[in-house]
Length: 456
Image 1 (spheres, rainbow, N blue to C red):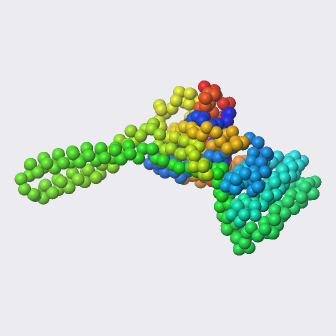
Image 2: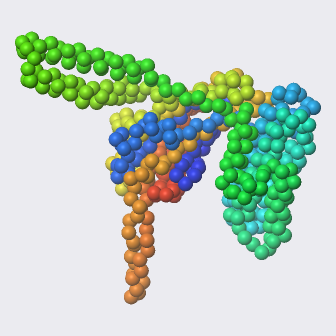
Image 3: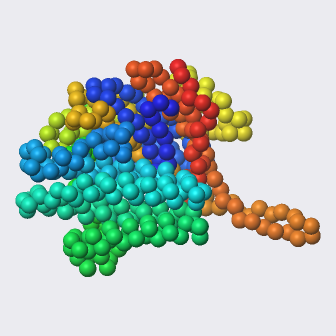
């Protein structure tokens, strides 16, 4: 689909990525069709719990030109511009290098032929060397600014080393490219020696994999300051929920008081029967008040937005983006006609009983313009499917086959399929696409786009 991609993120998560222009509106709907045998329903998986724990939204500046960091090297010179802008410009440059490196590492790992892989890896090493030289050319003498530089330089050096080690570990092996492999390994050693020479990390930290990893995660968050927007989440229906609870309580109390007054008029004096009757009345009130409140609240809340994400710039404190979000269980009759028709195109054996969950996100960019050089911001929504596999069975026994006179058995795993309909609405029009997510208890096995994108 144009401007939006759906990809696997980690073992049991996937993410949606799309870009937005200043003052642009976009709407995204996801319809999950979950087989009933997965055991997902309002009693086992609460929508609000799932939203807060397993749906993450991310927003940051975005540039198509990954290999040409938009914040030019002269902007990270202390002698150019205001000192107060140094940290922001440094972070923009460092973050852009990281994004470029991650994107190219992912693309290079797709090359399974050693004759294509190693030239691409060498070219990537040369590009990264050029970019880091521009960064390290300017070392601010001011101690306050120097700490920002050291944090960014330390993280980038470590991330570069780890990325290339991962590249060599997962890439194709070939004795014909020993020289190229030795060069890349030497490149990794140089980055490691560079950090040692500058005493960026203590020996105690280096000796503990957990400590060095956690430190680098902290440094990564530091370079995201001013680039990745700060998120604030608001629950939209707090006052309405209080009103519903208050009205239900008032109605029940009025009914209870009516019964109490009638009981007092029928019983001229306090007796055991009166006490028992009053006890039953108050017991019924406590028993049904919460259930009645939840029932009425679900009816009122159906179809209403539940949350709002406000993204603000960490430095200027200006609001950049607003997201209005929905998440709820729905019935088949609530599906839009086009979505239902797309689901019905499945093969007959796949049309099993399913539970439907609808996620909706209305995006609105509030900013009229972005930082110089940035025309778009990137949105990413990550869904963790771990709660979906909580009740899945671990396996399905063994598959037996006959080969001549010999019977062999092979262990097989039980897999489940989730159908996902993606609806994307922009000023350019509406698009629909169906995805099939195959997963087991430990990972997403495959995410497959079913058919072409459908324009509405």
